[in-house]
Figure (cartoon, helix red, strand yellow):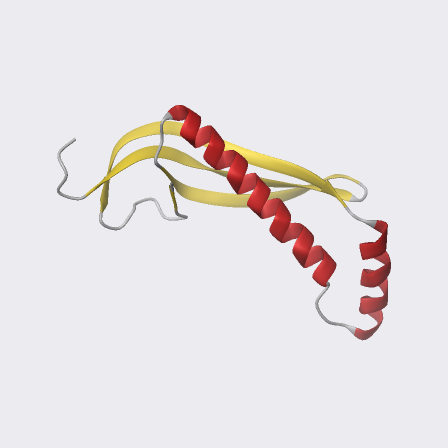
Length: 110
C-alpha cells in the first residue's frame, strides 16, 4: 500500500478514486507519564512519554485507515492528513484521513 501526503504518486497514474478513508484512536494520558512530564516541565526538554504516545497513536490511526482502504480495493492512499482533538480531560483523538485510490505504474495499460 502506497501512502503519501501528496495528491499524486510519482511514477504512477491514478486510475480510480474510491473515496475518503479514515482511521482514528483515542488515547488517555498515563499517570506515570503525567508525573514525569510535570518534573520535566521544571527543567525543560522533550516529554518522551508523550512523544511515544503520539507516535503509537499515529501508527494505529494509519493502520486503521489503510485497512479501510484495502476493504475498498485500494492499493494507495493519497493526500493523507492528521489532526488531533481533545475528547475529554486527559484524553485526545488522533485522526488520519486521505483518499483511497487504485494506482498503476506509468505506462502500464489498465
